[in-house]
Length: 359
Image (tube, rainbow, N blue to C red; front, top):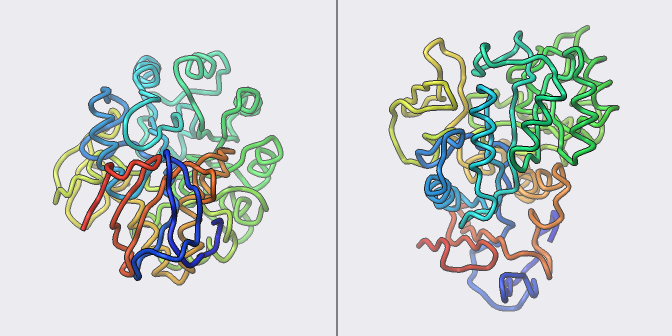
C-alpha cells in the first residue's frame, strides 16, 4: 500500500500483485516496493556513459542486490557525440531492473557551479542541441541551470516532449528559481550540492525549493554530501516530496575498498569510508546504495514508511510513473523483502522470484 504498513503477506501471480494482507507468511519480515533511483551514473564497476549491453546487465544485477527495481541511467556532461552514443546504446529492454529512461545531467549547467562536470563540455542553452539529444534515445529527466539566458526555451521544449525537468548545478537566485518552477521545473537535483548557497537575505535555489509546495527535493543521504542537521532541515521543510537518490558511480555496489574509477570523462579516486573525489577534492558521485540511503534517513528520525516512500513513491511521482514505486493489487510485482534489521532477504522484479534471493 502507499505510505502505510499492512499486516499479512503479499500474493504474486504472473508478475503482478494479486492481494495484500494475507494471513500467512513469516514473522519479522516486511515487504516494500522496489526502489526507484532517479540518478545512477554507474554501478557494479560499470560507468553508464560508456556501457555496453552486457555492462548494463552486470550493473543491473548489482542494483537488484540493493533493492533497486527501476532506475534512470544518468549521463553527466560530456562531448555531444559521447552523450548521443550513450543514449543510443541504452537498452530499454535490459534484463533486471527496469530502465525508465535516461537522466541527462547537463550540458546546460552553470559554469559557476559545475561540481565534477567538465567545464570544457558545458554549453549555453541551445534548443537545437537539446533536440538532438532527445532524438538520440529515451530521455525521461534533464537537469539544467534555469538561470542561464535561454533556459526558458529549454524548459518549454522539455515539457512539450514529456521530460521531467530538474534544476541543478545552478547559481539561481530564489527569484530565478521560482520563475523556473512556474514554468514547470518540477524538482532540484542533489539539493545544496553544486548550487547557490543559502544565505539569510539570499536564500537561492535551495531556499526557494524548500519553501515551494510541489517541488521534489532530491538528496544524497550518504553522510558526505549533507550534514545530518541539513538532512533533518530538508525533511522538516519538505517531508512527502523528498526523493532519495544515490548519485552512484561505478564503484558503488562492487564491495571494493578503493581504487580509481571513471565517472564519464572524469577519473575518480575512491577510498574506503570516503566519498568519491576528483584529484582536486571535488565530490564526484557516491558509492551509496539505495537500501543504505533508506536506512540512513530512517536513522535520522524519519519514520520507516516515509523513508521508504522517499525511495519509491516520490521518485515515481516525479516522473509521473504510475507503474512503479508502490504495492497494490494489479501493480507490477517489484517487491523487496526486509528483515527486522532492514537487511534485504529477497527481491522480486516483475514477480520473478529467481532474480535475487538471499539468506
